Image (cartoon, rainbow over all chains, first blue to last red; front, side, top):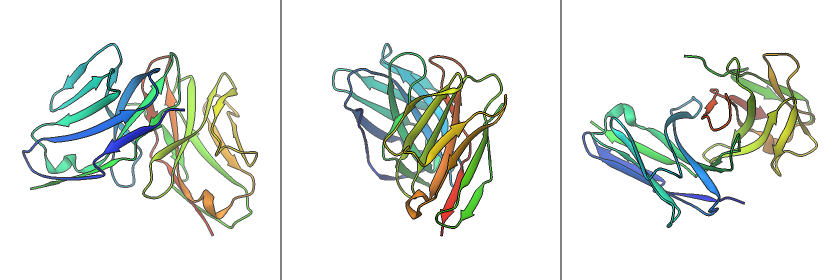
Length: 113
Length: 113
């Protein structure tokens, strides 16, 4: 089955810096890659997603890149703010229609003022 | 914005007792999921549900677990005889139609004593 690895496990940056979180996946059939932000006591909230027919997607300060050949995808947050502090999870799923998500192990991002 | 709601937010139960976790998915969504997250670990898929039947289940989802959509709005997860290792956050998610993102509730923290 699919296995998703995520790095780093923790990331500390200064406000205004950029943050990059990387994930690799094992199943070449995976074609959907969402990123979720989880704040304390809350459920995962979708922040951006990308499908395998696209190499990059951007939404304001957040961007995701996908390298299908290398089976890795990354989340880029620019101009970080303290409210970006949270745990970020990458995930992958395969097939068409509804499919289970396989999550990475999470990255705790701390943005210091 | 429509959201997935879960009740209760925290459930404390004695080992061996039955517990039912409840979810109200986003209205008009067709695909439903349960995931769990043991403290400090990644989110793990339990089961997916569509058209009033289980579509896929993980190894975690053994005979002690069951899901039901008793009416047009609720989606429940039942654990028949809880074990200490069932202690975790349980998240419900729903998806509107094929290839749409999954939306998560804020979870139920289940504590087994």
